[in-house]
Image 1 (cartoon, rainbow, N blue to C red):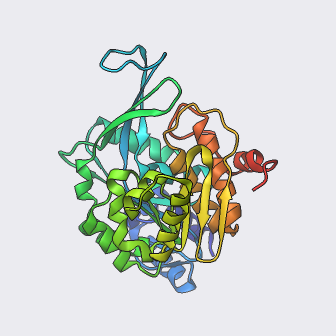
Image 2 (tube, rainbow, N blue to C red):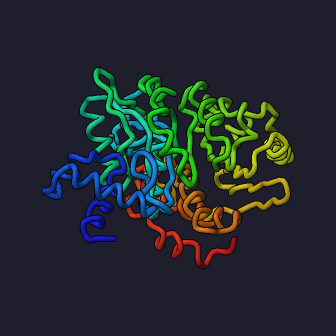
Amino acid sequence: MTSREDEILQLIKSDPFIQQQTIANLLNISRSAVAVHIMNMTKKGIIRGKGYFIANQQYVVVIGGMNMDILGQPDAAFIERDSNPGKVKGSAGGVGRNIAENLARLGTDVRLISVVGDDAYGDLVLKETKTAGVNISAVNQISNQTTSTYLSLLDNQGDMVAAVSDMSILEHLNVGLLTQHVELIRNAAAIIVDTNLSDTTLAYIFSKFADKHIYLDSVSSAKAAKARPYLSRIHTMKPNLIEAQAISGLPLESESDIDDIAEWFIQHGVKRLFLTMGADGVLYRTEYDEKLMRPLPVSVVNANGAGDAFLAGLVHSQLGGLSDVDACHFASGCAAIALEHANTINPNINELLVQQRIEDVPC
């Protein structure tokens, strides 16, 4: 590969959808010269397909919500129906976006497909997400739309009291948008979706990309039931107990009910189930294996975001070749690190920090 081809390749790696004229302007050469170099690299097998997909480059695609998160927490015990002195802060959020940022901070090449509005929140969310290392080339900023906003209230111990979300813009994260990114999705090593997507969009993904490893985050009990028609096509699923009960419709009144719920998911075709149970740990189930993973010691500062970090840790470590049990242990380390920071995403999280966190704690 020539030095000029290498320069072009680096620009393509940073933005797989970069225009040839943009490359020409950046390198101070003609567009026709860029076209010749790209043609030569295509013949050599260095890049392939639409969108300049780089051969043998492993990446993850996340399709899901992208929000502005507004979080309030009182200084003392929460008093209902009253004004509570405390702190209010805002940051980029959204289940899909949070998973993508955690993946990027762990070192995974991740591409996010989502939508934001053309407002101040949209500009801020895009900037924070790109700064964190996520490729946002497939995020659409839609005119005359309000960026999805999630308002949550914690108690003084860090547990969520209530939340309100305005996510109407996600109607634009639809099949029409995804058809623009078919090759990007098809060439991914793994696809992550959340149930903020519409039923039509989920149906399209699970039909069009049925041969891919699809990971699903069930988001909340209100949205979790959307996953039910697609259980047999899910590679890995990470519901909490309340979400799992909402999907299965089974009772959740005793410890034995937890085993019944986990078995229900496996019988309905889920390949790998990681049932998160808070302080009781994670129940890992496949058709052939079962293991209860105890949680790591943690001082909870903010309960938001632990599940997003956990799923990111699973995907990152499984793509890295870890066994399911070891991947679950790594993911638990990610969740513990997330819980100990005031932000939804701990900005300090990285692979080395997680390894140090779990190395002295047995699976």
